[in-house]
Amino acid sequence: MSQLITSRAERYQRNQEKMTAIILFLKQESYTSIEILRLLLGYKENGPLYRLLRKMTELGYIKKHIFEFQTGKISIWGITDSGLTQNIRDKSENFRTFKPNKVTAESLERKLVRQKKQISLKKNVQTVLPNKAKVTT
Image (cartoon, rainbow, N blue to C red; front, top):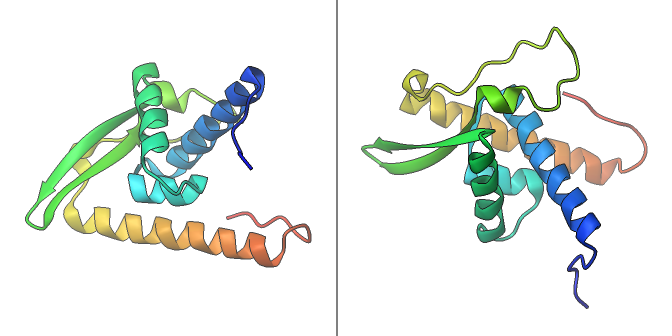
């Protein structure tokens, strides 16, 4: 049985929901990796996520930066000024855009580990308490 969405309107709506989830996450975190975004959205493969990220990059909501460390390269996606203006919920929101020159190897590693734990915790709580309580962090 296929899980493909055949309705064009439903596909568009689902695409918007995924873009909104990424923007709201990046508003809080400023930047993240493909692995973390895959966990956030529940993707099994990177291909569809890369297409979504490319679309968001073309819209100017996010930007990609490749960091080269002694241990190897890592691609990071961060939110732009244009991305911050999306999904404004409060006029007093004060978020920062992604500034690659401010990121160090140590801060990047700490942030990605924290993000991974945060998403795993939220998913576990939602599994244990599916309709009982809404958990916010």
